[in-house]
Image 1 (cartoon, each protein chain N blue to C red):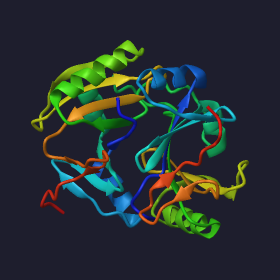
Image 2 (image 1 turned 90 degrees about the horizontal axis):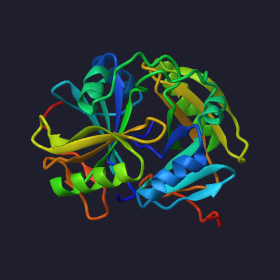
Image 3 (image 1 turned 120 degrees about the vertical axis):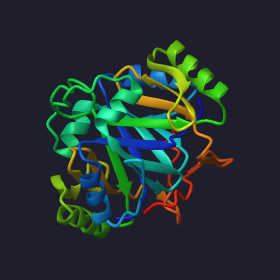
Image 4 (image 1 turned 60 degrees about the vertical axis):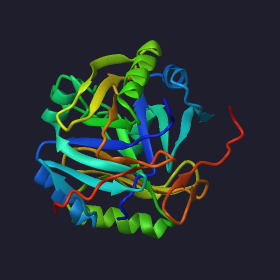
Length: 144
Length: 144
């Protein structure tokens, strides 16, 4: 299996509500048959009804009841940009679960959840490289 | 907020078990202070204790109790490659929740869950472009 990800699909209760939220953040997507696709660098972020996603994957669509265990992050270029993006998300309807603050690794980050509870971190980590096209390149940590 | 994702963090019960699973799929990562980082194209996939991830994000770490509502996908270049990757995942300890089969959009896909229940789809979708470096490029669907 190659070491890459092509799609991140967020199962949502209401695709229109979720699309409005992400478009409120400035994202622009395309809707096809009730599914919204956002090109995001070399992958696509997809919004789809969580019942349909569960059915498609052969997964029981039990109520989530808590933390699903996945967090997406967007790394940005400065602490000020962390503040600006978290504030914009809150204006768009996000719930800020951790206001931006310094992190244990010497960075600065905040977290919010989208209207379906999906977790996003906005982070400035001076140890990770962000290329001009927004790709994140890990350092060589010197560990196996 | 820019339209991109830098990190996908999977909260896991046992980082070593999860690392062994992904390395069994052929992925190679680096571990730093109990966190494992895999470079995956222009982002990093990260394995971290779900309790620590929840605490970091200010999220209640309630038992997941069902489908967390997120699916990751890897698109591949042929139906045969879907079969091969899903079979390799099963050998590495995955649970196949939907054996590979044709899809409603004219492709071919299967789903599995990793040892923590995180959902992966392996898909061949002739309508999406995969570049030589593995980036996925959405078509212009001609819809808003």
